[in-house]
Structure formats: structure tokens, C-alpha cells
Image 1: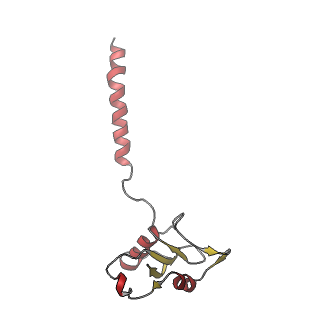
Image 2: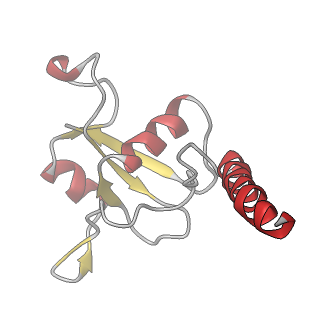
Length: 119
């Protein structure tokens, strides 16, 4: 009877406790590194050839210094950047913009270059 009591009470407690301990040590924030390129949000090539930063900036209505009056005070929607270890620039949104803003205003990432911000 004691064995059944142990299995009926102690094992569920150990399971729940183990689950709680496991979830307590898992990260609850976005753990992506700021020095790695995003998987699916970049546009790097057209017709199989890398595009230049100048081409991407012209094609996507981007700016290099002061933002146009109609977008001042808002977050850029996209950015043209070159990721560390990559041979050409990319046009990206979401995570790319986040990393570009962090690089520009808070913590520079070695080998990362922001060419422009875009709408």
C-alpha cells in the first residue's frame, strides 16, 4: 500500500516540480544574437547577382541621414545593412531594423554596417 501511495502522490509532484524547474531556466526573451542575419526577411539578390547598397537604397526609398519629414518620429519599416561575414548588403524588415537601430544608437556590432533606413 505504501508503494501505491508513493506512486500516486510523489511521482506527480516530482513531475510538476521538474516541469516548473525546467521552465524557470528557459529564456523568456528573444535570444537571437544581434550579430546574425535573419533567416527569411532579407532580400539579397535579384537575378542571381548581389545588389549594391546604392541600388537597394534607390529601389526602396531609403535615407542615410535625416529622415524625411513624413516619417520623422516613427520607426523605420526597413533597413539596408551588411551583416558580419556577408559579402553584400541586404534589405530587411523586423529584426534587421531592430539590429540596425541598436547598432546606430546603443551598441555597435563589430562588422555590421547600416547603409540606410527605409520606409
